[in-house]
Length: 514
Image (cartoon, rainbow, N blue to C red; front, top):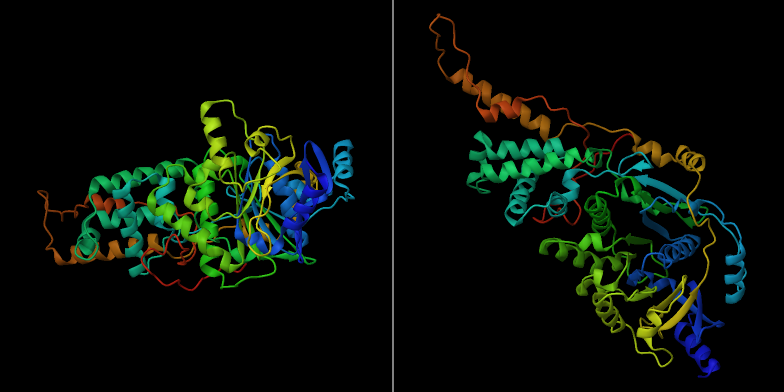
């Protein structure tokens, strides 16, 4: 097979007149051909993408390579740090024999470099605290992490609808519990019966137990104020886009929570950014690692919302890259919208693996240079089968690619370096402390107290056998409403796409002094 013909084919397929992401060089019959450069046009990064491969195949380094070049081009990046080992973005890499050998084979000059990084955390322990109010999170996403069935999810939507109509900010889980109790018993139940429907005690109790179980998982700090401002994701330092890392290594045993939270961020980005049209480069590229966690046991309403965001957000200048082990982790309706594919080695050890391999091969353009199915199982570490969209939006030639090495440290910072980065961060200080505004908890407490006082004043006093006035008896509902529950934090009534199921207009933000 002619090497010259192969090189010419790759050069024509991957040629671009604008800025690019350099991925590596084509490989033919085991030989790395430096002139067969594989580039991803920067303007096509908002056409979304998929990075797959078995554990240890090099997916993380591929993400690192792409994110570095996006940052250098002035594009902001958001990326979850699943194992806590991506903080090395902030520090120059160190040359070694493997890097030198790879650079020489690709015919490139490797230069070390560090990039601007912001560290975030859902626990507040490993970075700037990321929060959202319950209202912003919305009933669809909240139903997913609470694992509610269809009936229970419908009840949750009633709570959100009522809170919107009555200007009740549901900031944290205590607010949510208060609204749930109020609407399922006593005066609140009577109030909503005609306009919203009755909430059964059994359903309310089940939802309440699930909320308490969520609290027991130690994620209370995830809901509240000061909630995260998505504008902070678009920061630049000396013209380079900031790489925002969400360190979730300390909440890995709660995958549904952190994956759903990332999606809530994406939904809010979609809602708030203006239309941008076709840009020379995206404003932000959002990486969703361990993407299969998003779709596992996802209800239809949840899937519908994901599909809507993925389909429309590119017009806001945002690209999404899903990262997972196999292509089948991503539903077909979403997979069809991912124009850029970087697929590392697939292990075909079981019948299911073989089936997955054959299905994956069908998603790639035909190649006259490769037996694609065979190549998938023979890729080395740091190699991938690639096809992207060229500047005209046409899929490029499928090519086995020897990937370039990242410029930054391929590993975590030392604890001292990590803490030093946090201490220098204005955003860490901005989100460190919680704010507790007036919200549904206080408002409904006052309302219940007022109802009680009105009832007491309208009932004639009675006396006990001893001649003393009898103390009015509290109902179970009143006991619940008047019990002292320590609130955590609070914030605003702005809901992202996943919360706006009833067409409510976003309310004005009330931000903290930060």
